[in-house]
Image 1 (tube, rainbow, N blue to C red):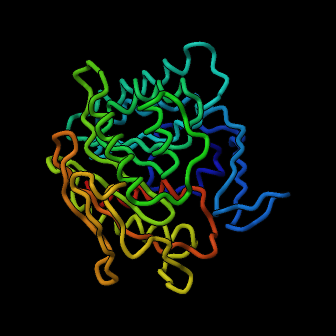
Image 2: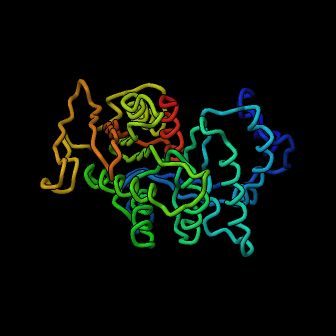
Length: 323
């Protein structure tokens, strides 16, 4: 990054690289509110469209500079994110796989005490998703994603195809079904590597609610607090305020939800949301693993100020209370 951009980052944040560039890579973010029109189209929800001219992030150009710092830093949590910049980037043949193999090597070098989280994003290139399932996801304890990314990953794991569009406000039962399927599929990926990690956490952030699934035997703590903080962070970030103002928000989630798509499925129940205790948690078993699932409604901002970066902030809010 340039010297000017470095000035905007708090000094408490350490950078793995010492050199700077003259001109920063450009990311152009077009944000729009729910109901806004573009020609004949009307936005069903607040969102953004991002264009970039970035030569550094797609190639993970600072990856090697992080290696010598990890031994001394000894992180409790290591987060892998931003790999969506590799999607449809014009790499020479084999280069992207080599860079992702380097990510795998770096993660494999971490001690077992360090938890590893991978933050998903929007991927449409089948080859890249396949490479993520080979080089990255099997080496992570936790994954985070929104409802569209969840549907994309679930579909790829089951059919090796991608979903180019998804419901922006899925019912809780549908999201829970997809989380269970992804949890089982990732834990049973045929990866023969002693450095492989067992997935023990999934965090899905949607417009209307937050959902966190953890394996009971894992080291992830405080799922109730984590899902609540994630929900409040979603409101604060999108509204662009540090305060919770009920007048600026609405609840999209119904006053109750089903835990399964059909009532005759094993363990099916309907959970009512109480205004005094809005976070709902319960235990169940997925493919022989005992898990705990927590769901919290989101105070949806009526007039979105910003959506870019929401997922990263929401995921970080949940993670910080669980380590």
